[in-house]
Image (tube, rainbow, N blue to C red):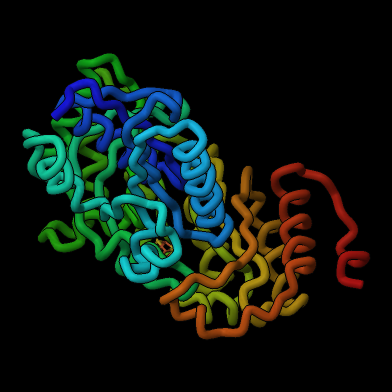
Length: 368
Ligand code: SF4
């Protein structure tokens, strides 16, 4: 292998993808490749994709087109690899849709790909150490995949079923991070509450947080994401430990009971509000952010208004609001995507103004 070959990684999507990209970059450096910041200097361009929304996929299609133009105009020999969540579509679909991509590599298959193309890596596990930073936090994946099958979501198809890293591996990684000067860690998983659910301990996530709190030199521990249906009293108690961040991301998705049912979210708006109250009673200075989807199939104006009401009651510090887009293979894909784009956009704006811009708006005018 030519030791001077260089790679460039373009990452789309969430912090889990950021962490995956960094682990991949480490593996490639280990086998002698250089990372470069300019795509024109790269022999390999790796696109770590997100499939959560159609708009995220569209960015990948645009990038592949631009890379192909670069290949033609500058006669470069760069090879394009697609990895990440878009692989859930399956090879026949992707090869047809993205014929200019040279390789499609599923995230768990990277070790084999590297071995076949660049020689052996020392790594064994697919979830390995990484030192990616996000807002001053070192990212530490503690689990992958999801078993929940919310009807709009591709994650269980794209990332597979839940798989947790062993506690000792995580503890040792965090101790190493502290030795290397890191003081804050952000634990990552699609639903961290169910971390280690196959273990014999009653609430393994609580046990993990307790152990992490005991690490000398570590100052702050945060986690993403926690879902409302299995955020137990034990976990709330662990969240009150001294090193825990006072920020909680708690996706609500909708404030309407029927829409939540159609989304296969296992709580009602009232249960969500009661959970928030319980958390605030125990940790009064906690700040809560959320995810919301507007324009889910069949969402009426009244149902959307229930979401607005819930947001007003809860007082989120931030909301990641997205307009529903149907995703292949998901259960909701079979429902008619009947809310026009203009209406979805209007609902998006209402929540953005209310939560993120903290502006008042005239809901009655909106309703009319
Ligand atoms: S909990 Fe639901 S929304 Fe979150 S990753 Fe799993 S299926 Fe997707």
